[in-house]
Amino acid sequence: MQSLVSFLRGLGASRLMAMVAVTAALIGFFAFVIMRVTTPQMTTLFTDLSLEDSSAVIKDLERQAIPFEIRNVEEVNQAFVDMERARADGLIVFGGPVTLEHRSAIVGLAALKQLPAVWSDRERVIDGGLMSYGADVADLYRRAAGYVDRIAAPLATWTAS
Image (cartoon, rainbow, N blue to C red; front, side, top):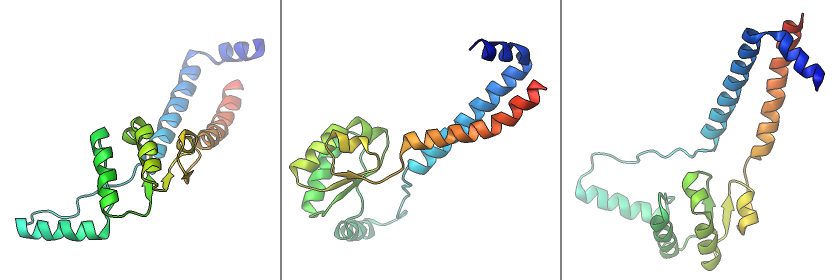
């Protein structure tokens, strides 16, 4: 430990700040990439429709069982009512702040309605969900640390000389 402290003191303030800035930038970049990859893309399907056309589109979308989007706990309950009405065969739950906040309600309602649910992270399976299929976030951070090490190792040997 003493050798690490003496090494850091030998680097000087400017080099140490540069290394901290590069590390922070890399962590921020990888966090941004992870958030972009795990966020599902939702877009507007139709715009500028008349009332008759929009009614026809809504009926068609209900017939096709288009995915439900939730923003709060009331919409969670309504989504399960709508899924029951549409006779949904299963449920895929993507990660995000809303599903994380209401995970117990979603797990409980899926179990109550006997609706198989696939989650994007394994922690929801521990909470009582059926199964998960998605990236292991801890492994992503472990790999990111390897990349940081690959980038920082030559920098450390450069600053030591």
